[in-house]
Image (cartoon, rainbow, N blue to C red; front, side, top):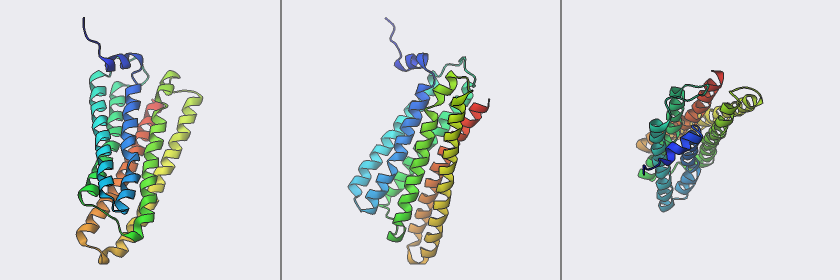
Length: 226
């Protein structure tokens, strides 16, 4: 008897659910970042490494789901959006997990501790970036409902409100980043130059993660407009 493909069966029931699951896993990687930075601030490197392993595992799972979606998403779907748009959405979502992994690798690889004077602002920034990813997930979780109503009606207005909140959260991360970079700039002469370079790199990657989460929302906005 021919074997059944569980993922294929899942697509048969709902072609959108695996895409939503992919964003959920990508977001899991992002949500681990506040704990990673808290452990680093405490100098608990064993815990840092444990959290980084969880981030890496989530990123690998996201990659696996991404490849599965690309292989199994039907080429002919009776939906109001093209298959190519859904595949592009998955690629954008995947960037969230990849960036979370990159951040964790730097923090873990260098036993990175930001200066004490920056810790409070840094944690606020990290949590704000994680909040942005969480809001992107919340919006993507409405994608199946949007498809059911043909991207019209009250559901669209509700999701548009969620996307406005996503934009607001991302703008907050921009403001926090500017403040942190300014504080770091004023401290540069007191710090090892190589450390400073990596501090800026991590701050930039955190900002990139928030931008990628917002781009998920932007792509969803485009799908609703078609």
